[in-house]
Amino acid sequence: MNKDLFCVIMAGGAGTRFWPVSRSSFPKQFIDILGVGKSLLQITFERFARIVPQENIFIVTSSEYKELTLKQLPQMKEENVLLEPARRNTAPCIAYANFRIQQINPNAKIVVAPSDHLILNDSIFIDTINEGFGFVAENDCLLTLGIKPTRPDTGYGYIQFDSSIQFDGFQNLSGVKAFTEKPNYDLAKFFVESGEFYWNSGIFIWSLQSIQQSFKEFLPDVYSLFNDNADKFATPDEAETIAKIYPVCENISIDYGVMEKAKNVVVLGANFGWSDLGTWNSLYENLDKDCDNNVVDGENILLYDTKNSIVNAPSDKLVVAMGLDGYIVVDTKDALLICSKSDEQKVRTIVNDIKTKTGDRFI
Image (cartoon, rainbow, N blue to C red):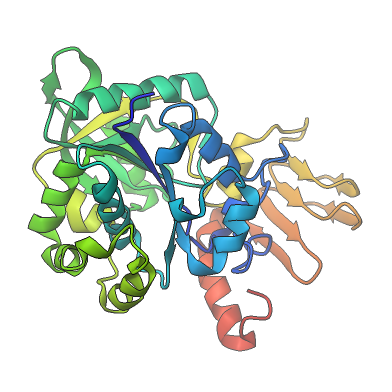
């Protein structure tokens, strides 16, 4: 494999929209939520290990998930698990990985991806990533993967591509006009019907030099915090350095901080069966359904006059549902969620309310 290729897997999220199965102590990236015997993190790691050298894969996660990460991925070197002392969104996460990789290989080409996305066609995905690597190796650009939308989903960000900007030898690669974060239904419907928009996958490919220059230009404060301590990375002083940087580092996403401002952003359209698995409804959309269009996960679930719903319960729990249409029912040992699929975006707010009223007991 090409030693210049690196991968950064972002695995620090709390997965609140998958409550009550996903908890702060054991969030969704560590859960076998697809029922295949592996967590989403394990699946993601194994997929990228087919593209880049295993020793060039870095996982950025919260310090509280260190042991959990190493337990699920015993093949990883401990030094390749980068620990964040606080959650500061994706830009600081990526900056941390950049400066660590810079100490190893300043000519690196990097793919950055979340740990908890669903990819149905690995072979197409691998071809797409390799195509992206080939492009950024020859061009000073920030490449993002766009997914052709299949429905007006309000839970995804959208990318308006510029078909007037094309690149010889690269199909489905174009310029970018605009990013839109989670539109309302009417706007999402317009986006899909226009044929000019992709879903924003949150997967990026770039050279280390290109992304470092973009941080320097658009997030100079974040860049300076890390650059002033560049010689501490990949040394015994790294953990202490990060502990000082993160509390004062800006909390900002890479999309808002860099991608929406840079002029050298390109989008590669792809169709490899993608979902960000951000909500129970996105899981429902991607799992097999019974004759009534229900997704059932549990050994003792009885449904009567129920359709278009997802029901998840422990194997030792009897759950009976009657007269439901388009509902999410998730039962655990200490919590029960029942809500309409149309209201699933409110789950995060519900979790915040629970924390306010009961503390961390159920979170």
